[in-house]
Length: 392
Image (tube, rainbow, N blue to C red; front, side, top):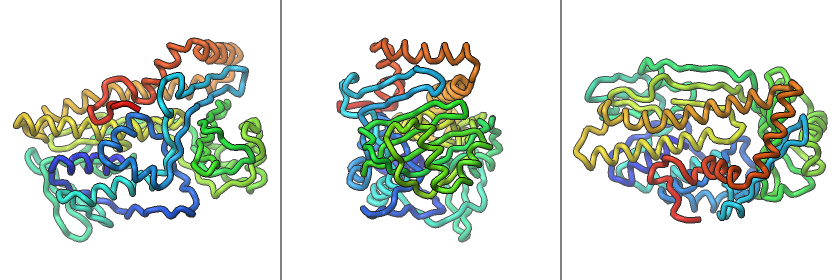
């Protein structure tokens, strides 16, 4: 998603781009089952996709807008509710399957004459130099470029080849994901209940079902995956307090280990890392992919400006501007999510009391609550031009 976003932005400005991808994104059919991996797309990410002409393709496939977000604590009466109407916008965001985002972006990339789509292809070898980066593919083909961008995920081969170290810390949790149908409609609301073992989210899908993301301590997550459907549904309903009534069915389930990662460097001469190759965070606020998309938009803007000023787009001086811009914002979000995770996992009575009181207090302080939400949605802050709102 992040790599295609950058490629599309660059290709639209007549940069010559090669995309090396191992797996061909597949389009969905209207009656296909929902994919297990979905993303909560913020307003700033929506604006980026609009700029790239990919947004309508996502809406034409499957996307679910949500107008409300409700969060509550399992250890007390603390809760907070966000409403798009209070912010004067049409929605708080959209829940979209990752494959829908990928294919809609690819659709736009393939329209651009300056983009070469090399798929399925694997990278065998990477050679770096001050002036030219060389990538050797498994078919023997060699690609050379001024700038190599690693958008190849948490286990980035580009990052490893560049000898960039990574600071990482396991959250000691796994995210259990699946798609559930309940007998009550989700009410266009993203729901999240904080349990001592980790947060449980019900994210709305366009047919009235929900994508669940249940982050639980490793042993608990393994138990949930091992359960049969009946036992899992019973546990799910209890954990969610039957908020959407009876859970009628659950899809296949999968679990993914959660690890906080942050690359010690985002850039070297002729090299930049974006998205999960540079950072991964806890999914409790759904910010991971949105941070990556802002990386892509910021790097594109830095490269555009460097070319317009006659400067080297791949020099360390140019690329450091990108790193300074994005590292601070990503770090703040990463440590905020770690703090939230630790805060809500603490079962001490005093901590639980303060946590619940804090949620209720912020819920009553409309201006503060709305300020927090505007920043989380990407409606304000140090945003790339491509991500700025032009009105909703």
